[in-house]
View 1 (cartoon, rainbow, N blue to C red):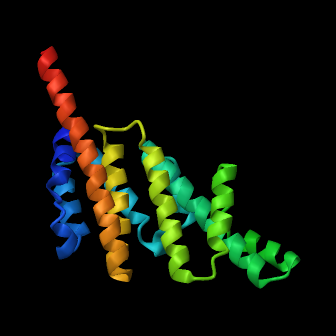
View 2 (tube, rainbow, N blue to C red; view 1 turned 180 degrees about the horizontal axis):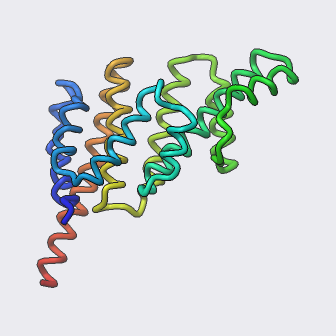
Length: 211
């Protein structure tokens, strides 16, 4: 039997007080990892492998896009689409059309990865921002919103936990780059986890009343 209910119910142990002390992604990840099955640990390992830029090869994306986890598939399909969009945006900005097309062909990963038109427009707008820090913030906000979409109907499953870790990594990144942004994302993460915890308690109450 999986421990999803217990793991998710335990996530709100991240209190608002932690906002001042800093967010420790590694410690939280290890606590979650220790409670997971061997199969679910393998999914966490796969998710985290993609957090390292050097690992983002065609072989990695093929592995992620073939994962049994719908979140891993969706997350890295998005990551790949963003990567290719970034190559396209930079190439168009720096080179003449013909040369830009050659650069896109050379540096994009030719794997199936599609974006909705609305997401295409959003990313085009983000990559046009000349302020690097603002652009990175907007990009991570976009990723955060998509993660919520991917797990909209997930609650007591490994995909919900993987989504939490993906968000946690974004928080961890901004704690290093920008303290205020990190605090803001951490508060957002705690609020969302509390909402999940409320649903967990409701589920237990319903089960007890029916049992």
